[in-house]
Length: 245
Length: 228
Image 1: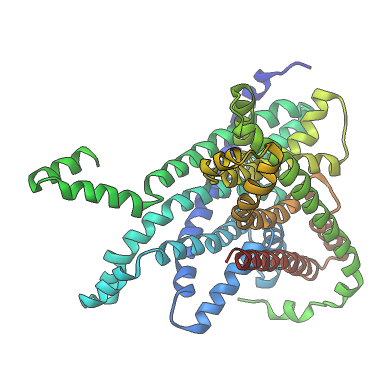
Image 2: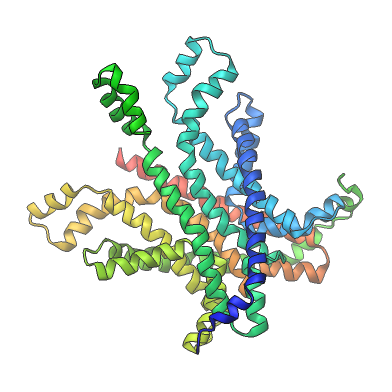
């Protein structure tokens, strides 16, 4: 059994088309997830009990129901119920985005809740209205904590894009599977895309880990850095900040 | 926008007729979840974690590469790779259930080995040294000192992983395993009533997922009470 790499390279164009579809799914889904997640998170921590329970139900439902089930439901049932045409690409990527929104809402909430209470109280004491209180005090600190889990979730999200091949979206995995079926050389194509996926997803995971090490424990790190700064005379402070951006 | 005539025409009475078949399919998912958790998470995951923690580089590096590779590729690709590509190498053809289980076991093992490694790694070096200074041998050290502490740290992420395993089992339907999703798509194409069938499938899957979640919360709560 020889490994025919030339066969893969000859069909590189088809595989590249598939890879672009995969990236398009990831882009659409990520946009829906990032903004949808912010909305769900806002509802989850709002003062209205109705909004809170709706958000809680949404998060529970989309977190525990298998992705494949939801994708099939969206693809086969939404066009019938709304009497429209929905392509597999849009149905699938929006559903993946809605699932991602449930996960990201919890990530955002964890970030917001870990902002020390004193910060919110200080903003109140300064008489800051809601917008600057959130925009300048809470969110910059909260998002800093959310960014590493967010990037980590994006790596899961890239893996989930393959599920759209179940409803016939010609992404990278489906193209490779079809090419394998045509040529009866599954090993070449499937191994090739496994490597491609690895090089798409592994850097994202590494980036998330790096962010986690740098930003994950801000309390600990900033306190040591802050105490270090406090010991320096004032003139050196800005210089050292430039040296350690 | 909503097609109300269509909604009125829905007939959920066929659901009762096909519910046993769908639950049968769901049983396959639950069986695969159990296989993934016990074989993959507990057995292979522990072996991988121990290999990863090994001071011998010839053991720890292959384990590390294996874990990173299986964590960085999608389960769907792994499953079709095991089912279609591996027989070309080994010459042994497997049933979809067998190859699906193998892909799931290694995938879960890669995730769980990181959890187990993290749990054991979080136990301070002092605990090992204390056990040694008390004259405990290898087995009592792990059985009485390290594992009781490590398992408490591992439980919350393991609950999350169990839900992920259950969700992942539906992915294996692409290999033509007769699980919930494949049963549902067969039924919907034979009855021409996709909305009724897929909605029922979604509700059934949600119930199982939610049950695992709440069981996990209950276990965590009990453990916390035990610690206090």
